[in-house]
Amino acid sequence: MTQEFSRRSLLGAGALGALLPELAIGRAPGISSTQIEAPVDETDAAWAPVRALFMLKPGMAYMNNASLGMPPRLVVEAVAAGYEAISREPLHGKHDLQEIIATRTIPGLAAMFGVEPDEIALTRNATEALHVQATGLALRPGDEVLISTQEHPAGRAPWIYRQAADGVVVREVFIPSPLETAGDVVARFEAEITERTRAISFCHVTRGGHMYPVRALCAMAKRHGLGTLVDGAQAVGQMPIDLRELGCDAYSASLHKWILAPSGTGFLYVAREARDRILSVFQPAATAGNPGIAPGGTADFPVRAATATALGLVNDLGLHRIEHRCRFLSDYLKAGLGDLRGVTLLSGPRDLSCPGSTIFEQEGRDAMAAVPWMEEVGQIHLDEHQRDGHNAIRVSTHIYNTTDEIDRLLAALS
Ligand SMILES: Cc1ncc(COP(=O)(O)O)c(C=O)c1O
Image 1: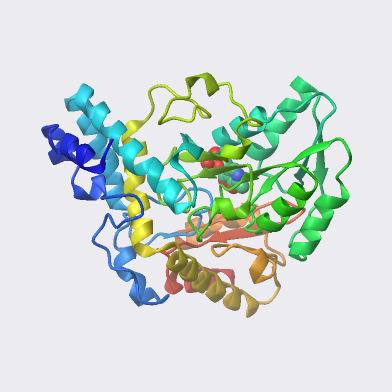
Image 2: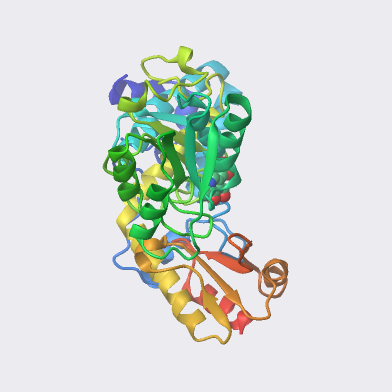
């Protein structure tokens, strides 16, 4: 379906043309879909117009983006317009939303991550994608898969299922927190490979913000003839990512965290070359526009179509600028934490920690109790991080946060 046809069809749909304004429709994958000027530097002043796009309750400092991101108003409006469209004219509405998904959302994701549209399948979240990729990998009883000790339950659970259902042996490789060096992470995985090992499965960015050396891990795994399956839930949207360059076979992502898409959005990438090794119970449903690796059927079309709007905004801002802005804020936070007594930063060196998430412990502070307390005293939303034996607080700052909000947090901690 050409771009022009798609556009005509949208506008020709009567009510839908009016309901889905230019903002919601976007223009083309990889091209601007908003009127937002890219900020000239990383400062709060330059990003103030971007902050103004969000609907957050006045006075609230939301620093829990790693749990759930905030879609900006234009994305919320695109979702609403889509639901209105399928409610007023279900037949045309559905068709036109499917058009947006097929011509903008999926190609937009493919362009953003350096792959082909038929390598991308939309899912409801990373959890669904992680299950499809892990349950789809061709394995025999006794075959081994290595995962890290830092996996999210959504990344670990499908392997535990395969262990029980298929006799696959799942071995967990201990990875320290903070990470020591990229070489150390690779060496720890490589040391656990046996002649029965068939694949490694790990996070790109962990819940605590540790960033794994994905390219080096995939290259090492390839040398041993192993499959590589990656959990990118915490990575996409924080920085530019080229999936082809990373070299993994499969990659699962959430779009409702750092990419600012509506809640209930994610994708699964399966490299064409890996398609014969990563099958899916949905495979028989494969068609030209749908690789058949993810659940098909009627979906939340308005939400998926509105994802194109979020991608347009991210393109307008530029992932490299988003990365710099996130780094600027977390560097500011880390410098402030360094001035506080009793604080131990657990985020690790810059090349091994993601731009937006910071974890730390504070002597005498129970992280679990700190979360509701911060909300109560300062309207500050954070999360605790009780993994890897830590009693840590996680602060995940995104482009819309400000140094004033971080100052408020530092003041509360002190
Ligand atoms: C590393 C990691 N993987 C997977 C998930 C699950 O993501 P979703 O809620 O999109 O299924 C999360 C959610 O926080 C996560 O942090």
